[in-house]
Length: 144
Image (cartoon, rainbow, N blue to C red; front, side, top):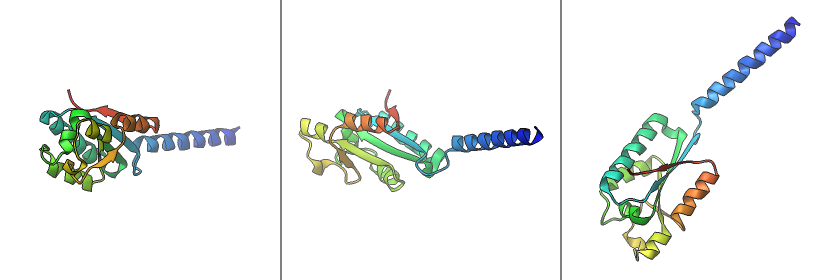
């Protein structure tokens, strides 16, 4: 009886320890966040940059982030319109991905040459967000 009780106690301690370690999520890629940007408001862009900075400061390499720009949000990734190029470059070097919706580019007649080179492309912005959510990514809508 005493041996069973000790074994049960040990099992509980191991379970609690494993559970608490999983809460810490210190392994790389433990957090996956997809952020939707559909606004050309520069205050929204500034807020997005603050959120990215805070996520990386808080979780470092244990967070994977992709910003999906579509609709008016693609302007943040256009060479002639962005006010955030230096921050985008900084975040890109930290592993944050910025992607542009090709449907938006086609519908608005925006050539890929006008998009900053730090950006990637996805066929459908909303489709990309759905795919990420289906894979367990957390969804955040930027803006007000």
